[in-house]
Image (cartoon, rainbow, N blue to C red):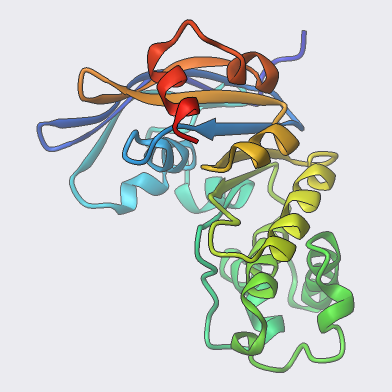
Length: 254
């Protein structure tokens, strides 16, 4: 059996004296879509952002336990957070588009990291835009403001910016919740294609989406007032599980 690309071991996140997520143990396989489902406020987004240490940018949050990437701990003085986030990129719920051109948006991360020579930026931008299924729509207007794009196109542009750094893992925090049905379908089809070369970890409230794209799921529920991973497994097994009362209640409300 292949080693997981990501693991969490007793991962706990606290805000002051309040525990947001308690002792989450996860094993995420390579080149699959791994989904988080669960009610609002259970800590799914917090858990997701703990994987690439983005949680550290929120004041007063403290992480204990461990995240392993290829078996090596990501928390500690030996890890460069910027380099880590290039390998484990993230796509947010709302498109984060800079007031720059389409091209400058795509190469923003590559430019910041400085690992790709300037002469290779156009090639990196085209590759990323093609991978995000946006190249044919924008190839003739790369110098135009990115804010002129539709919301669905902006979300794919943000995905292209993430992909430009050639990440092994792409974290997605409810990437379609702000999109119309057509744009949502486009992102879902992209997820299924992207897992050929990347591992995807997706937070979603949409059970139809979870059934469609996720190979494995983790149900993050609230027990004793604290977010906890209460059930993991294949999407089919988790969505058919009747032994976890919190999961059963969640599914009944959808």
